[in-house]
Image 1: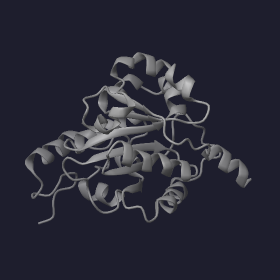
Image 2: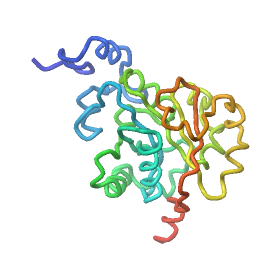
Image 3: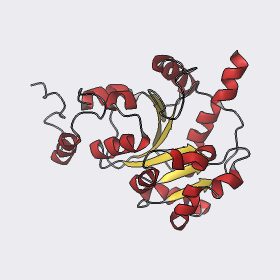
Length: 238
């Protein structure tokens, strides 16, 4: 018998069914983000219990090798099982002018991740109906309570994350990994968010434990820095 809209099938464990029922409809749409729809957005499968998954959000306008470098570093240094790219329907802090359609940006992200099974480009925020990071994190942790999510971002975002809606709650929701970017190290470490959560910072040598850490917990990774940015790539294409 087909399962009811908005609920997992009867074979899903009760604890997961309860989580999906509590999550309810998506934030910005009345359409329920059912397990089937989310599985399709994630390439056909839902995450397994206990998996460590990094979340790399962004416009990906377009996606490029810098995004891939962060993802591969995260897989290795944070001991993750997978990294999901969350291709945003529309970043609230970025103008719509010059923003390619979601389908085009998702296609560019999938082209970059092609052949890498552990790095998955998704439009899951469009399926969930979320635009803001905190809303996305709440939706995912509610629907997948037994998955260990880690938020991934570049040092440039740490510098200005205090402009994001309810930014302290992002750090309190999931562990956070910050990746060095050229010309941002000093500013990032002196940023408001870095100072606010300085007691929650893990030594870089303990980065492999981040996914198991209770938030707030974050780490700054001095990985190989990639100077590429989507802004520069768009300028070169003109």
